[in-house]
Length: 303
Image (tube, rainbow, N blue to C red):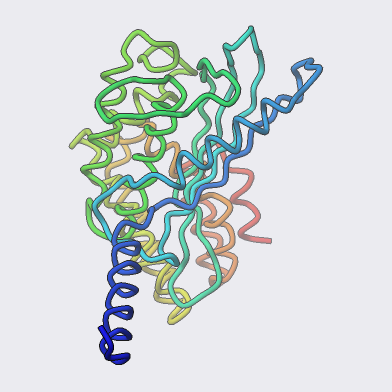
């Protein structure tokens, strides 16, 4: 082909198609994984760095949904894994899981959800490939990571659209069912109801639908409005919390309600510090009644 213009057009088309395909298949997660073992005596802790890097790459380079998610819209997830015991290639420890998202028209990021998993165990051999296939447990560690990735996607989607994360909660619950009789995946594991079994169960249980709607309403009608109209945003959050109060008898022992307050209490304190004096007093008492565990912390609203 001698025509240079035609060559340029073909080259430009190839570039557009290439980058268009790349964008369409772009990964959805921007994870930060940290693996530590401060209480474990080890002569060489390099394996922890290897595990950390492998886990982060496994999450960040895999396509988890059929959605087209732009770079600035990637879901921000952090996993902090503390190894408390190592026996040959068997690791035991805890995991802290957190999902954050940006607030519209601001540089502020709100913590959507955080959860402490106190019953983590898996086998890992340094430099092994971290393989995963949906509906199959190829590796206890990658299955654990997939569980939390699906929860992260569901939680993020729920915060932008009413019940938007349903499909991903279903995937998480399928993982739980697949891992039955494995340590850390059963009703009796962990501390009380604070475990992976009940977390997936609550998110999929229609009884707790209002708590899922709380995620959406709090973020879309509340936090995303703050930059534009802080007084209205605060008023909306108050109304949302009072609606929750009406159903407290139904929800008070649920893992989702407990986790909402353990995640949001620092933010709620800051939100109501900007209220009028009467509202500060009223909301400090209201939040203390709703969340007695953090009652002393809500006193900071009045300071």
